[in-house]
Image 1 (cartoon, rainbow, N blue to C red):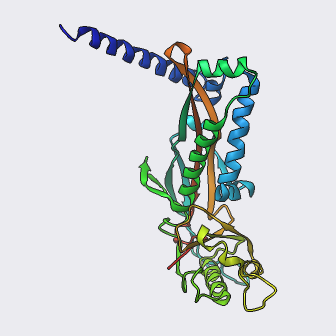
Image 2: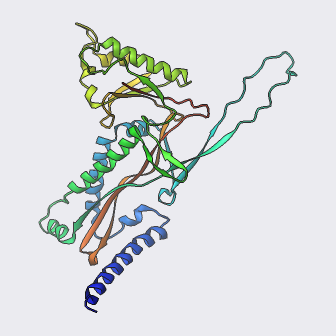
Image 3: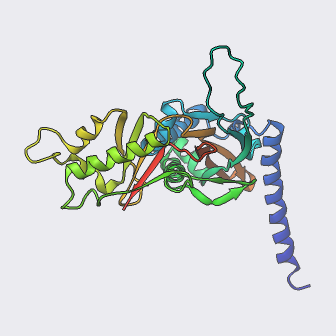
Amino acid sequence: MKDTPAIMEGLSALGNAVRTGSRVAMKLLANGMNPGALRTNATLRKDEWKELDTAVVQISRQRLVGVQDLISRGLVYNVGNALGTTVLQYEDASDMSDAVMSMDGAVATDRDRMEFDINSLPLPLTHKGFTLSARVLAASRTLGQSLDVTQAQIATRKVAELVENTLFNGASTYTYGGGTIYGYTDHPNRNQYTLTAAWDASSTTGTNILDDVRAMKQMAIDAYHFGPWVLYVPTDYETALDDDFKAESDKTIRQRILEISGIQDVKVADKLATTNVVLAEMAAESARMVVGMQPAPVEWETEGGMLLHFKVMAILVPQIRADQDGNCGIVHGSE
């Protein structure tokens, strides 16, 4: 058969790939799906792992603005063995009828029974890979140079940007296990508000913007969510908020917004679309991050150890929440 050598070569390569993948999978399974099992190879030295980890942490802090707001406030739900868990199941509860008053307590009251619904949230991996050759690694050691972490930084930025984008814009096309991942601007129960005008328009005044923010706050209060809040604006609005609130004012629009009771901060979110703003209640009943794995690099090798594969992986999934009556603490403003 004329093509037999080529076919045999292809089958051999496929067999090597399967064996390599099998070793990685078996290592994870043998260690309870702990990603740290892929960081125990002797290829990288301790200081080289430290350089990679430091690069990952630095970029994560730089890019995860909205995500870090939730994490820094403790608005998280930690998932153990997240690599071995594909779906988070959680319950929401109905309300009960009002209490009554009587002098002897003998008046019959409604015998309520709360209803609990089970919901699901997919827990996908967010990841980006890169490679290093053994020769490049050996050359850096021979010359006494530190490990070039540029690829790790870029891969981490890609992971961070996708996680941040998911928080603000959701990933409603991604469904698994009967659940869907929603963000601030696509959750079906978010409060939707129509802005008076674009905040960076020349005709828009500081009073217009302040009125919009106050109206958005009132929408949250009407939904029984009482703050505190963080106001997120798109990049286009950043400098607009630095304008004077009114002619010859001693305060900027941003400062006046921060004087509204309950608003803790005003931040720019790169992932927010133009003319979209979000007033997010910083409370676990409105939003939290499901944390299974912070961004971290893992490693495996192929080609007899000549090619080193790295992947920055994270399991960080936003969970925007509403009660069974559809009340939500997120207000999404747009034109």
